[in-house]
Structure formats: C-alpha cells, structure tokens
Image (cartoon, rainbow, N blue to C red; front, side):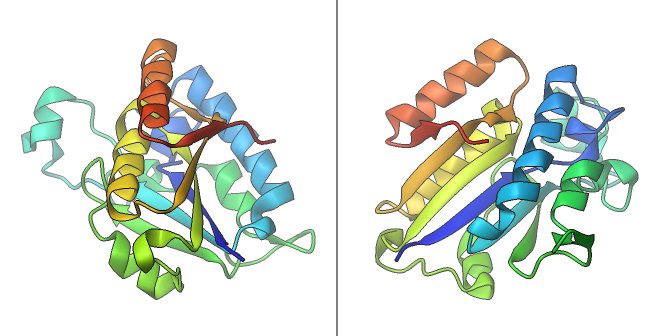
Length: 197
C-alpha cells in the first residue's frame, strides 16, 4: 500500500493568520477550512510535513526582500508560527489537545522551494526510492502561485513516479487569477488537482 503524505506549505500567521503581514481574507478563510479538514482527516495520512517560510533580520537585504519589501516570517516571531487554528488541529488526539500528532514533521525553508526533501523524507520514514512510486503526495497551503507551485515542481522533478495531488480548495494565492494559472501549470506537469473537505 502506498504511503500518503500531506505537505502543508507555509500555513503561517504572516500568510494566513487574522492579521498577518501578507494575509488576505481569502487566505485566512482557507486556513480555517484547512484546520477543519485536519481535525477530521489528519490521521488518514501516514506523514504530515509542514514547511515554514523562514527569514531573518537581514530580510530586506535579500533578493526576495528587495522585490517584496514586506518583512514577514522572521524566525522566532509570531508571524513565523503556524496559523493558530491549523496549529491546534495538528495537536488534537482523541478530542484532546496534546503535543503535535506523532506523524507531523516540520521543515524550515529559507526560499520558495525546500531544498532538503531527501533528508526530510529519510528522517520521516518516507519511502522515496524508485522515483517515489510507493508514495502519494498531497499538497496544500500558501501561496499557490509561489511556494506551493515551487515545491510541487521540485517534488515532480525528484519523485517522477509519484502521484502528486494539489488540494485546490485548501490552497490560496496572491490573486485568484495567479492561483488558477499555478493550478493549470501543475496540472500540465501531470499533477492531479482535487478537492477535499
């Protein structure tokens, strides 16, 4: 039986919290949907990976900071944390809040795409050999047209035999047209765009 891996991309306060530095109403509402989904379905996945967009005090001097001069997701700040509802949903076990569920892993990334997938897969016990033909990946999160698409394309390149699913109703982008374009691009690269909930 194939492993089912859910990858939650950058569901952080600065992207989808109530007052995040880059939050939109659409992102906030999508985070609430994601939290509700996780409360019901988190245990259906063998592994859950949460990527965390991670910047430091030098952000405005970086390439990204010069193009997007909105300070966000600075390591150690409230904006860097998982969105509160999503965070709580990943801690629920038998209707009580505990530490994170045992199948949850975190990956701090300092750019759009995470560059240490194989190390993380090994730590998490994900069977990534043979091009990933023993794994199904499900991606959701923020922003569809930046970090979700970046990581989906990396996964497609390093796991060419894996089935990759993009959960469209649990992801949100910078604009709806940008989101639609990113979904179309991922579909063109043989990923399955699906709805869950």
